[in-house]
Amino acid sequence: MTSEPTVTRYRSIWLSDIHLGTRGCQAEYLLDFLRHTESDTLYLVGDIVDGWRLKKGWYWPQSHNDVVQKVLRRARKGTAVFLVPGNHDEAFREFIGMQFGGVTILEDTVHVAADGKRYLVIHGDQFDAVVRYAKWLAYVGDAAYEFVLRVNTLFNQARRKLGLPYWSLSAYLKHKTKKAVEFIGAYEEALAEEARRRQVDGVICGHIHHAEMRDLGGVLYVNDGDWVESCTALVEHMDGRLEILYWADVIRDRARAAAPAPAAKDLPPALPAPIAARGPAAVEAA
Image 1 (tube, rainbow, N blue to C red):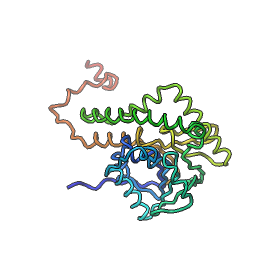
Image 2 (cartoon, one colour; image 1 turned 90 degrees about the vertical axis):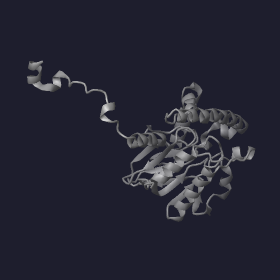
Image 3 (cartoon, rainbow, N blue to C red; image 1 turned 45 degrees about the horizontal axis):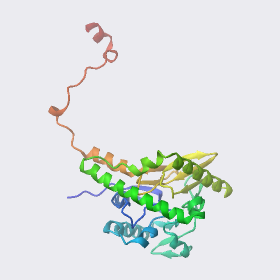
Image 4 (cartoon, rainbow, N blue to C red; image 1 turned 135 degrees about the vertical axis):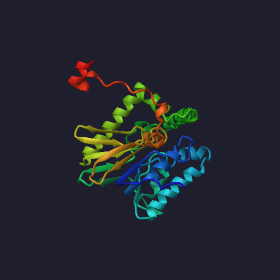
């Protein structure tokens, strides 16, 4: 009989860049996250559904439907669920201020944490010059990114067959590219400046698929990452403390903890303790 999963409750959870409707979406990892967590408030910080990809061809496996159903079930059970649309699900921006299935759609919002700190919650594509001023280039980049994600999917399928944990090839390549690193830095500074302009303590965003939490000139910049590369979520503990969870690592550690301990006969012989740890008597005897 399968045991019930251990559930951790948080005050708030932020998820973004899930990209339902694409082959790169790590829906199974996200479903595992949703089975093991609960919260009073859930923020969906854009690019939840990838409308760009669905326009080119329909892809919607059962696991993607399960994600939607789990989110809607949370809203029915009393979780305050807010959707802040991004550029890939920009169609939702036509419904700002409306509610569907218990999910309220907002252009952006300010979250007040348990410790009183105020955070601007926004997807962040508004501060991406390529998306704003050269959308055709964004589409070209998206096609190239989709190719890398397909390679990433095949790469991790091979790793699973070898018994190895998830590792993002696409994230590794992106963070090794100088231009990408420069873009990320400029993006972070732009969001931090917007937080200063709005006189809040920090900003929580998504868009660039790069989980990060750091102080930028007195403003806390937080990017909750994504569910195609890093499988990350931002959570607020009951005391207001924020933490980024790397769920692929959580799954790996859980699997290691559940693995049976090796039998005594399979263990290597114990090494002698260092002389300094054995005490004076042992040193003299040696």
